[in-house]
Image 1 (cartoon, rainbow, N blue to C red):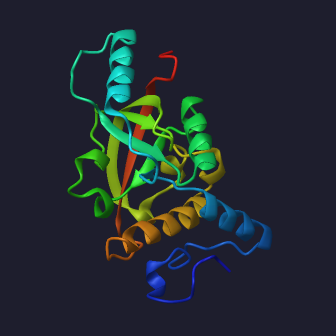
Image 2: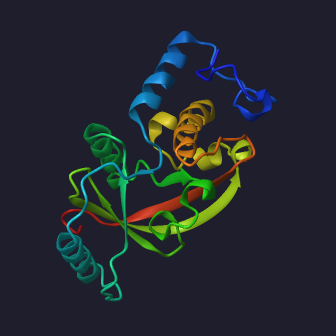
Amino acid sequence: MGIFPNTGNLDDRPGAKGFPLFHSPVATLSVVCLVLVMSPGDASSGDPPDSSVLDSFWSKCQQARNLEMTTETPRIRQFGRDKRVSSMLIELIAAGEKNGTFTSPWIFEGDWNTTPVVGGYSIVTDLDAKPRLVLKTIAVHTMRFDEISEKETSLDGPAVRALEVWRDVHWAYFERELAMRGKVPSMRMPVTIEEFEVVCDEGNR
């Protein structure tokens, strides 16, 4: 049995049409724990950033990496919905263990600050609004939720790379995020995969 309630259109949940859910109680419990603590995509529940601190961080990164100087601050993003998880995800990204994230046009439509753009830069802050990383988006493509394979999930953190785990965790994520927008997830909903690389860390290394 999976972690999803037996409600709604069965074809619009993982487990339908050949997508089995977990049957092991241990595996199911692991997924439940992941759902409770992880936010796969960007979050925005932390403190508001100080623009002067962000400008300084971005300027130093541009100088350290010989980037084309611009006064325009990149989009700002946070990962995770509590400080412990945020710190864990930032460390995974900095270590090269998490090289992408997953969102949906149903979530970011109309919001430039959450819309991934190839070649675009973004500043990652922790939930105390301290800048930690500068990322560069190197690839963006969109496909249906039920088309995601382990080729795509390999970009995510180690704990959620297995396809069954990825589906369970991200279904819960999309369900929560879309509910706040008056929408419901579907197996056929568009999922945008953003691949990124670290340009600068706190020490501009």
